[in-house]
Image (cartoon, rainbow, N blue to C red; front, side):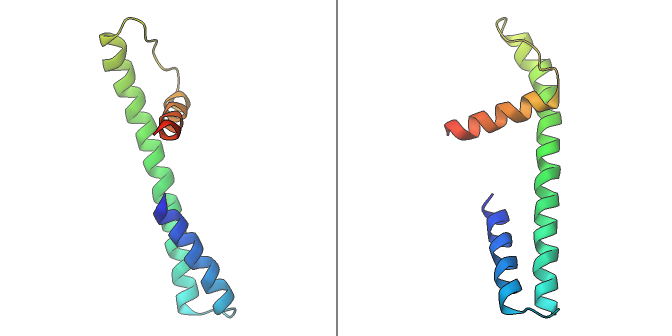
Length: 85
């Protein structure tokens, strides 16, 4: 998450400092886009692998746990755990 905030801040500063099209402004936008794309891809992979692990391991180990129906449940669980820590 700090990489996203850093790229966003750098892009904002470059937009104010270099109002015309320059190489550094273009590079900051490319860096921001690549960081955002990498973040969303990692969340998708985390959700899909997390669902697979949850349904194949955790459900078999604990009888009180139900299987996750979608990757959105795992993503919500990840956000919940992030808020607790």
